[in-house]
Length: 293
Image 1 (cartoon, rainbow, N blue to C red):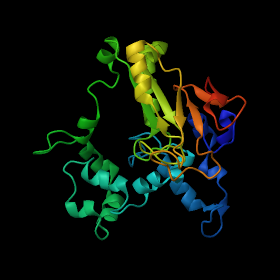
Image 2: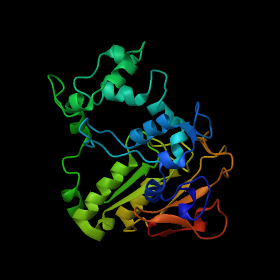
Image 3: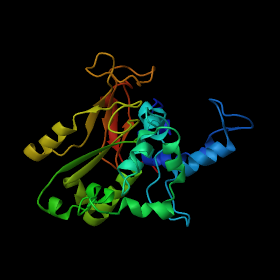
Image 4: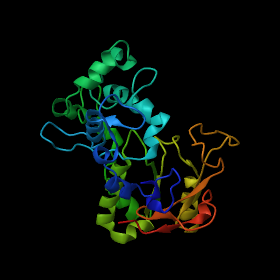
């Protein structure tokens, strides 16, 4: 996936093409014994393929988008949500206490003993999925109710001239960027190519949930939005910067081969930033182009 944007640099700039190109079952070497840094047993590859393939009911119905393959899945932010945290994986905690009605007991949420693991492994999509949309007693609004806008296609907002800049980390372990892309494609189907006059989506390679991961994750999207609204300058691109040791909030996950001052061009979806020539650590060495095949 790395070189699909014209440069092998630890930064997967063409996320959509990567999902088509990479197959964990085919592309990761198989071990005959225990997993190593170079291979995985077939059963573990199958488990990863199913996990990244998104949740399905027992009848095979998809209930959410797949997760995206991106180098940022090795980030600490990914591990905290999916694998380990002080009280257990954040995914399981959020599912237990935020995304179901009524919420699980506090004992489950604190992660004491095996209760959180029991909850996660015992969650049955066919049986428990309705709890995400449920209301009950004092819980008068469901999890989906407070997280879903009344009109995901934002007809009134767009018709009144509203401007929206959306950013999403390509390695977000909580909300899949592929779901955000699917939402944007529904918007585009409803609005056509004029959608870019109102809404622009920027994917940030390597970034976990809002920040972190092996990413250049410092981006002035608010400034881009203000220039669009106040001066009529739609963001044709934005520049993302790495948070090196000299920054106010250094990112400890920057790969050792990166310049601490690396910058990268971010292009509005579906465009992709491709390397042209020059210093590979500078955003001005890239241009926005049509997506790859």
